[in-house]
Image (cartoon, rainbow, N blue to C red; front, side):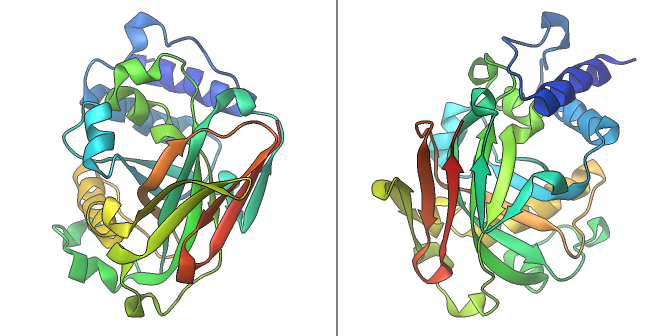
Length: 259
């Protein structure tokens, strides 16, 4: 069994059991970004969860600098942890690392690896609808921040769950870069931003992801979800609170963080 497989098994178990380890064993920690993606690939190959889509992370300069990254990162969204309209988290608070307001897409058509490189214009036609969304950030290794982007990528790309609101099918009529986002905790605004904080335009994230996945031998499929990266966050919220993402004309989605 490879070190990537061993690390993947530990991280899969930690996610399943909602357990946070202090760290991976030193010999299993990813030394490079290539190592980190090898662990992520092993997670997808060895987990019993079903792939429901993909996420993009580190989509602004501040997030990249904090993770010592030079480009965004990507990872899987598992169908069993994709929730419609709202989510109540009961248990698992130990591994919840914060909340992010995100623009999300549902795909109406495949974006095959053979078509890369993609541009914003060529991926836009594959979008069925845009959704307001919250990504709940997961943290299965306590020392992950010290590993930067390598830790994020290896640990399920930092995903705990993905919560989406109502579909907006006429999304082309919206100015996504200037679409405002308010991050609320118990109704109080704690941060505000807009779509420009996501690689300048959330659709840029979809194009980046399609090209990134093509380079790893994956491709996007009709019916899959893509969450484009944090417009706000990750921001912690106290246990017992409600976190809401208000996207104005795109709608509102919320998470009740109970324990």
